[in-house]
Length: 333
Ligand SMILES: Cc1cc2nc3c(=O)[nH]c(=O)nc-3n(C[C@H](O)[C@H](O)[C@H](O)COP(=O)(O)O)c2cc1C
Image 1: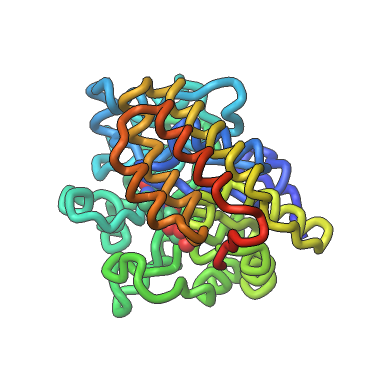
Image 2 (image 1 turned 120 degrees about the vertical axis):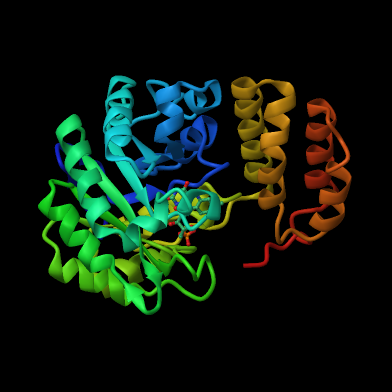
């Protein structure tokens, strides 16, 4: 059931993508997910204001390499002129696709009129999309929520505005801004958008297992699926989803030795990218996710939380994985 999908001029090898996640989808994380088969990966949301001021930290968000392709860069902001200028910077930096964030519910963001605040400001959303569309020929997407709250469900209105203004695809995470991550994603809304909108619709929300991806595609008719939290500590999800969609086969969970190998690799990539101190700090949370559900993992996580030394951390990982023989270590799903 995987199929190639085109977003504007960008042809993708299949329709399983990595969701943008702040604090997570940096260069090493994206590269690792690509090795496991994700067809399109996004940066985390980047401030358009920051890009224009060329803050060093903002610059890092755009770090990429030749292997990090195709790359979607997500920007956020509320001012059409600034977003248009930022779009130019993103294009000049070699992105393959530009996404405008219209779904972030974080207070700091919405109080500026950006992110999910745009779900209740259709006029500004239209002005932004007009200005950005004029500024760049990059494939352009928006990532939206269902609306502000359950009384203001505006996804379809915003999607129509997007379509009228030359946006090439819509990504919908069908929870409201007020809902945050509570409850479940309302896939019916993805179906509604798919039925009413001509451009591709990508569903985001609650794809944790290969069967979820199939169900989302079947139930909603959407053109592609995004995986977010399901990829934390689990890059195998891309291999699993693609294999299930293409061949209908469910892969076995990774062996412990494979799990350890990927932890070492991911950590190495983080250290190389961000340097020892920052790399280790970035990686620590991943280690918690990689060992979640493993018997004895809680004790391991306490111990590993006390070290700031990468060699010691690797030794602890090695000892942890080797202290448990394959039969006794169970992964809870
Ligand atoms: C830690 C975290 C950070 C996120 N950051 C972003 C972001 O920067 N931009 C965005 O559009 N969505 C962001 N999201 C939302 C995800 O892209 C996705 O739509 C949402 O998590 C639902 O999908 P999931 O159930 O597969 O995780 C974030 C989600 C999480 C959990």
